[in-house]
Image 1 (cartoon, rainbow, N blue to C red):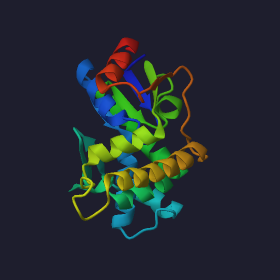
Image 2 (image 1 turned 90 degrees about the vertical axis):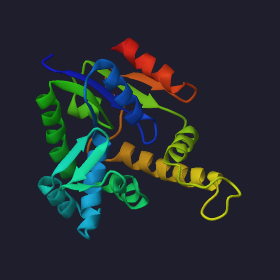
Image 3 (image 1 turned 30 degrees about the horizontal axis):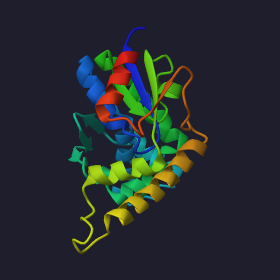
Length: 224
């Protein structure tokens, strides 16, 4: 194939982003977090005072904003939105925006152009192996137990205080809240009409529930 693409798909909280970056570093390739692009659109919609469920408004935003996802930083029209796109308001909005067929069509064009300019890359998301790069050299479908995914998300965010520290939610309450949000996003992502979350033909399923991070990276490297 003309460009080398490693496609990593999977549901929310399965560890795609950290895995993709580690694999990219090992291969000397660049990494694209396509989920950050959808979050950037959701962020821009909210920033403009729009309704994420307004398909026409969200599509117009997607077509006109400048999004730069590079080295862990996300710029939206020149504004550093790296932290904001991971906040609760964007968490609630992103699945609505990502279910919009016109938004997806626009971002798929941008994702393919990103890879074309770089001559390849490790690309992660929900539809990379099924829609964006169906001919990817390696396709991985990453999964994990929902409870484990929720716990990892909370551990990575570092936002809930230790139990008994006072103020805010307890650790268990934070995990329960994140688990509910993950279940909601799984439901939306798997049932939407536009590019639903599916295992791509030829993709290798890796269940990370009981794997260490290094073990997961090594499994992908063996596939490569």
